[in-house]
Amino acid sequence: MDDLHDKTLMPGQLLARGVCRHLLEYDFVSIEEFTPERGKRVDIMALGPKGEIWVIECKSSRADYVSDGKWQGYLDWCDRYFWAVDEDFPTDLLPEGTGLIIADAYNAEILRIGPETKLAAARRAALTRRFARHAAVRLQGLRDPVL
Image 1 (cartoon, rainbow, N blue to C red):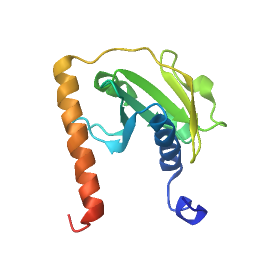
Image 2: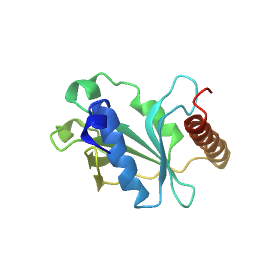
Image 3: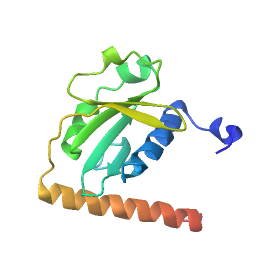
Image 4: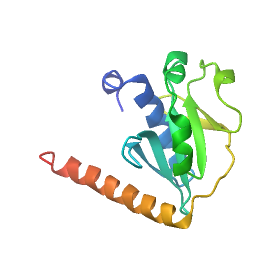
């Protein structure tokens, strides 16, 4: 991706791009700005090769993190939860017991894996179907922007 296009993306979107690129190295596919249920929108939801589901919230600044009081509501929608921040972010603000990813626009590194809390089978199945349909609609929208 060229530098001109990077300037049209918000800082959190740039972090998300780097995280999604990195997760692909682990065979995780990702979608950004996904709604697992009405009223909740996660920055990244990733689906692993064994059906595991991770949620990653991208925080571009201290103010971005402090203003987000809803992150705990995402824990019920994933097997593991991560924060993605840049290398200058004050990581001591982030809660213990969550994953940590350091990222930039082009790549990322997982520094800490959060604890695993397996989703119930019914929720996993429903969420995986919603993930697949969401991804398919986005792909179709690239082919047919009139949608």
